Image (cartoon, rainbow, N blue to C red; front, top):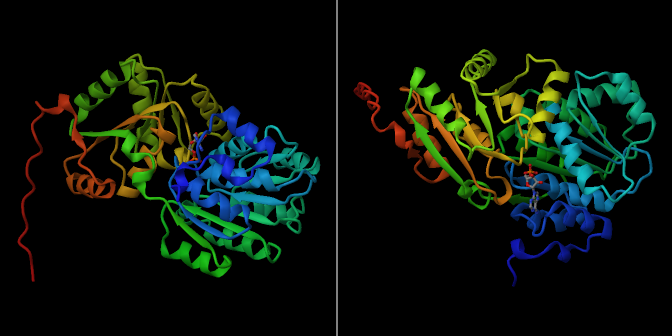
Length: 389
Ligand code: AMP
């Protein structure tokens, strides 16, 4: 039997406008998550897809949505996502797949004038991509009606949980017509997400794409123990290298994002910052420019960059080490996307060597020590505690 991942898109009986869009987008082969989930989704099955950003999960549900929806000017499908940025990005990705159809899509999110969204909704929308809170506002206001909905996608369900939206998501699910097809995508499946799935999904097909099948093999991963000025020097040297087409730099806090952006600019590196203290208009504008390639270096907090797909990101720099291995995977998933290669550099603080070990275990390989780091003194060994019984 042929490997599912090697089947072309031709195996799925997709309609000509969909095949045409795939061709224009240069999607020749389905990614592993697409190869395994397209058929059950097209058959109308409920599904749990465990896949990270960068796996091609948006098209895994986007292709069947475009294939199966018809323009009727009534909301027939919902995609629920944790952040505004992701709402915009997912809408653009599905719009690209729907470019040869007359489907109408709309991104709906908080922090944006509700009356403009309402006007767009009145004009007749088939598919809404929304953050949970704003969707509930529209349902209450009567500007989104759910009685025609027959497919719902929960994207990045684990993020919706960690951002405190899971009760809102549950409320929305409880409002949907019986028989609505439910697709849940999540990088990890914490207990609360599993519970939601068992409560609302009907005999779901479960698909898990191992990390090794996704982005990780394409990413060169290194770490450095440089600190203070040496750390900044190293980042500046790296960013001045022409091989860096676009870089995404992560800091732990908004203040650290602003501070690093300022210091990079002082050293002649054009950088922009993104975090949740900026106005929504500003965040959207910065993301748009980054996506266009007009911004080469973007400094971000985790939340602001969640799920963002930026094709040309060649380098991810963890200026502050991510809090845990899952966060590491999320961050470096922004580079080396869908087969392209990328590099990730992570700074490890003196107390973070245990975290480095946990990350290495999660990605199944050792991170290389950054070459220029060798003359740095290695961190002093930590005093051993005697183990108590
Ligand atoms: P996602 O995981 O949905 O954020 O997608 C990651 C990236 O892979 C996006 O830039 C997609 O445009 C791209 N992509 C999705 N499916 C394919 C495919 N079958 N072939 C090539 N690129 C793809």
